Length: 206
Image (cartoon, rainbow, N blue to C red; front, side, top):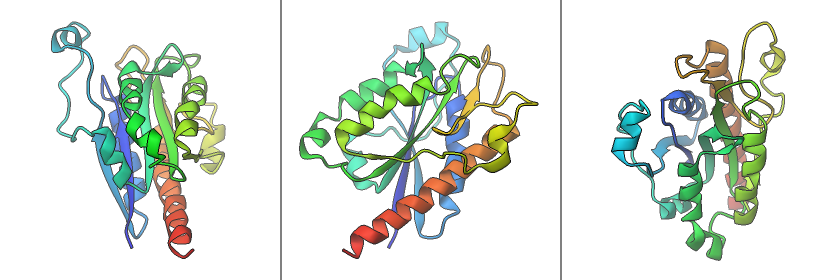
């Protein structure tokens, strides 16, 4: 019995995408778990993206709202905008009204990961304010807590992430996720996939 974990994200400059790739590796390392990457649709015109210096999108497929119903669990990733999820990801969730009406996602686990520009830019407020999206769908929020161990207490180097989920700091855009941040992302994928697998197993045996 395969457990399907969808890693669904929005990434303008590639920082969130790098975390997503590591999360996928972590999730896929759990036996019986099938992990898949998805991007949400872009809402900005190409002309605007060009002026913002955004690179071309990768070839990761674009997800539609109804495709969420096929998964057993989700890891949602997005950059912050003033302490909230980016509008592109919010627009995608706003289009899930049909799934909400039928509560098609109720009881499914979901986690989050994110990128901010600075240490005070929303490493905790971004996932905290995004939990409302899960609540209305009846999804089960799965944070990583302090399961990453010593890496959660690192203070000698700049490190994104929190008990809510993996994270990175983009700075002015030139900073890329560190090895420690990528390791935390891998851990989140593996940890979450294990929980999603157990939840699916328990529901199937009822």
